[in-house]
View 1 (tube, helix red, strand yellow):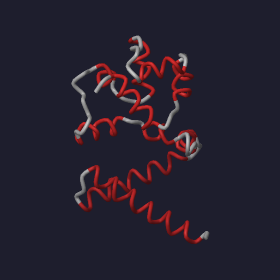
View 2 (cartoon, rainbow, N blue to C red):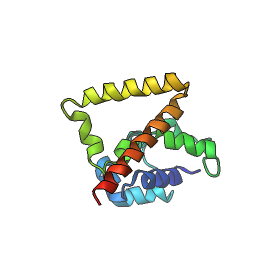
View 3 (spheres, one colour):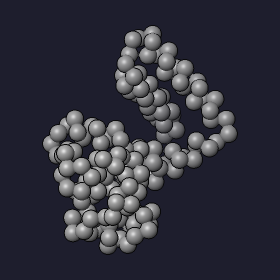
Length: 149
């Protein structure tokens, strides 16, 4: 996969526009467009900023060997490298701001203990414990949402 295709794919997955990327990097929207269409290549300093912006490795962007087209394992590797809190923060600003809320660390500790207890009691691996707790929270959310209708 070319650098341009990687940049286009990552930008779309992050939910950002070319304008938003250009603003964050201090370049024109046209520069971002040219990078994504492989008309030009960003300078290395900009590639480094792009890797931080998309929360992926610098190596992924510059390496030709990371071809993810059709390779599920490769796609999962990239999906795991995306900062989803940041990517979804445009739609849900709370994902960025809650970390600065006074007292939120108490809930972090409680949820961390719940995670450890669930994992140990049922002998779950890390991923299974996260998926199950996430599903339980989502089921609770659906019940609460249905009460308000």
